[in-house]
Length: 165
Image (cartoon, rainbow, N blue to C red; front, side, top):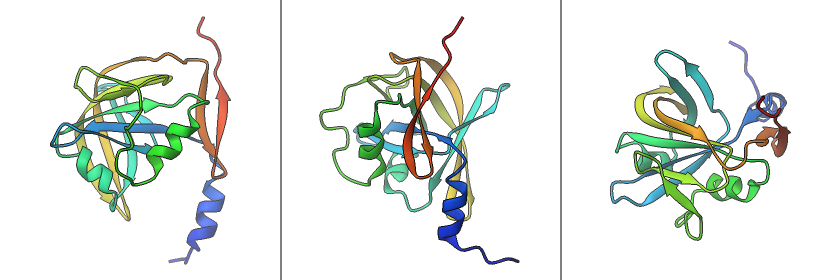
């Protein structure tokens, strides 16, 4: 088996653009929690499933997981402040943040491009991450639908989206 330098691995894979979302949920005390994810993807159309990877050491995910549901917030290009706020493990990340409840009660952040409300389908450990799969219960477009945020080479960049016709 080849030995791959982890720094080089991250550098090379950083050249593959990825989506930027905030996965948000309510903890056991009904307090909002959220974490920035750069690995969100559609998994299946029938049944409607989405997935993402989160570190096994994430304290935030350990608070979101037990209730069994979460809401994926697709960030608009101009929401870099939200991206970095939710990327750091810290208390009170929702302080001063505008949000509304999804049908599940989980947070839909203001200004997002889209939101996807899910029940937890499965969690599987792979190396130092969990693959989390959610079954989509509700979804809709948000306020901003013409730009999206992506990670590219370790930085947040904008992706202009084509208009719907």
